[in-house]
Each structure stands twice: as C-alpha cells, then as structure tokens.
Length: 268
Image 1: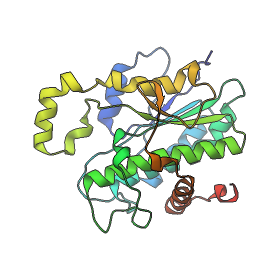
Image 2 (image 1 turned 180 degrees about the vertical axis):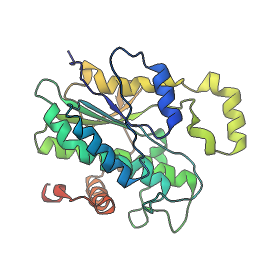
Image 3 (image 1 turned 135 degrees about the horizontal axis):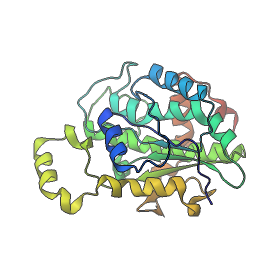
Image 4 (image 1 turned 90 degrees about the vertical axis):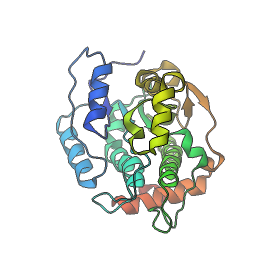
C-alpha cells in the first residue's frame, strides 16, 4: 500500500489554478502552498531552497504548470514562453529536486515524477536548431513543441533513473481536453465553440486530474516508469518521442539552457 507522504508537491502556474485545486481537494491534513514562478529560473531555485529548508521527504512531484497559444513573448530569462514555462521550468525544477526524490524512494515504494503533456505532442516537431521559435513563430507550433519536449524528457529521465538504479519512476500523462482557463488565449471563435460545447465534449477539472492522480498513487503503477498514460491506461506516444538520440540531444541542450551540469552525458 502506498504510504501517506508528508508532502505532495504540485506545481501551479497561476494563482487561479492554485485556487481551483484548493476547491477540489478535500483537505485531510495540513497543506501549504509555496510560490514558484515556472517562467523564472531564479524563482524556481528560490522555491527549491525554501522546500529543502523544510527537511521533508518528497514522494511525488507533479509537473503541471502550463500556458497555451500565447502571443509571441519571452520569459524574464529570454526563453520563448511556451518552451520556457511548459518545458524548461519543469526540467530545471525536476533536476533540482531529483536528489530528494531519490532519498525518499525505497525498493518497495518508489518516488514518482508525473509530467503532464498533451495529445498536441503528436503533431509537435522539435527544432533543435531553433527551440526558441525565432525563425518562424506559431502559437500552436510552439505549444506542440513544448509538449513533445516533455515526453522526450520523461523517457530520457526514466532511462537515467533506471541506469542509476534509483527508486524513482517518471511517467507522462495526457489529461485529455479539460474545461479550464488554459484556453483564454485562443481565437474568439474557438472560445464561443468551447462555451457552447464544453458540457458535452470537455472533461471537468476533476475528470482531467484523474489520470495524474492515478499515476501518482495507484498501486498498479508501483515501480513502473517510462509510460505514456491516457484515461488511466498505458498507450503509445508519438513515434518520434521514442528516438533515444533525440532524447539525449534535447537533454544536453536543456542543461546548457538552464545552467546545470549534464551528468547524464557520461552515461549511455
């Protein structure tokens, strides 16, 4: 049986998102929100310092922040916003917390990393020579690329965890089409269609969170990593996501971009 951890760490991009989570979670023990801006490498590092100071175990990390279809703009570190918030922010956060996850996982109860991607990754293309979309910017293309990067990252991370014999698993989740504020930057026509059909075609936030929760606590996922999950079932991601050379190259480039050492470069 999965132990009751003293911490479950969730990542929220906006105050509104945090409030939605607060409404839908039945509080049965003390919960504390710590501020972390995934658009700021400085904020991420400060958050990790504050979390470490609490000297708590970390059993589950859910990478769930995101922006979608935003106009072309940059984070304070100069990254294209989709790539910076959706991918690089989670990449840095996960790496900075990885030692705590390794310390918290055991042979019988692995620590778990769950990263939320999207079905949009199936049409995404990773442009290693233009990850910032400087040559040609498309809101949809930039969003899809960031979601594909999350799947590649998860598979590479699981490979490294397995190679090191760590008691930590990494999985990626597709929540489906969920009725949230994530659509606020889409065209007005799409907003109207969403407003008219959300009750029929969109999942509620509770329904959208179900696969993430499944990945985080289900006994069926104990020790299982490197999976793409949809509707609480393992399924196949885009073919390109299984390209191990592309996974490796993205990891190496990501380390350079966020300013951390690429210890994985010494591993196969």
